[in-house]
Length: 303
Image (tube, rainbow, N blue to C red):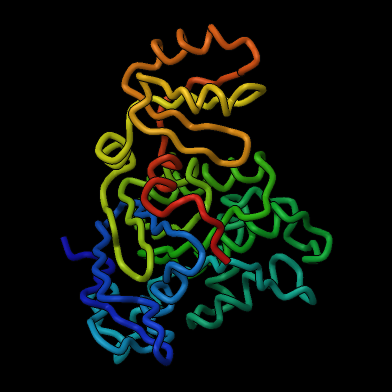
């Protein structure tokens, strides 16, 4: 089956700065692919290149069987995009926002009248058809933006941090909607800073940094390959003394603020050592995708 999106040797420079550096990425149809990376890693530029919104300095982009940028307009007719920031028209109602957006894809008023009820139902906004955008909550606006991306019944949906700024309830509603899209056979490309979100939704993940893909694989594969299976988070009075002595059973330790992260194969032995230090508190948990991400990209703040 042809890949919905294939990037080969993609390079983009701005002046002397290389933003995307020989990047290779290939999506599998009907799956959710996560594109993860710290701020400034090149994610947004990669998405703009993938949509033909900007031209690459080198490499090729094949989007839904079309070579970009020459065939970008044709390819984008079968793509839905959820931007990082909502750009709904505040002067129109929920229904009007969907109806007007459909015109960009050449959909008639009659076609949109037939599609809108299902789109509103998908977004959990069935009773909000005539509501003005200003009256919607942040979660409602985000769900409407997702519904709007589906007006053209796209084969590929690109989601740029779709749940940023939402409370847990709204985030879970959007997760449910995305799973329904995958159940319909659509391909998703997701960028997110929520590692739990990526671990829950993504079949495949590419971590990029400095414009290059540094690892690829399923969430489970990345965790099994790149990180120790257990983490003991340690904090409290006496942490420095305990760290100075070290733990014979910690394979690797990292400190962030007042917390020491102990990565280990034998957590029970670490916990037994901590019993002799009553001033310390700890949390034992399995390793997750965030641990992998921080190991590969570092804990330093990126602006």
